[in-house]
Image (cartoon, rainbow, N blue to C red; front, side, top):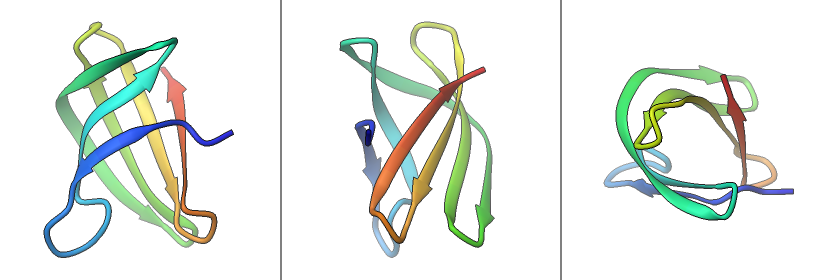
Length: 70
């Protein structure tokens, strides 16, 4: 299942996650700790407004997001 993530994208997608949809509600991303690229896509380690950290994976081939709470 693809999770919902909204992003700011000026030159490429995704550049910066803004919100994530987790457990039935939209949460603002407050801090981006790290961003890295894998052969399959882009990953982010973020903290959302609920105070929890999440790892976000965008799989380019499937145009799909996955969210993993840390």
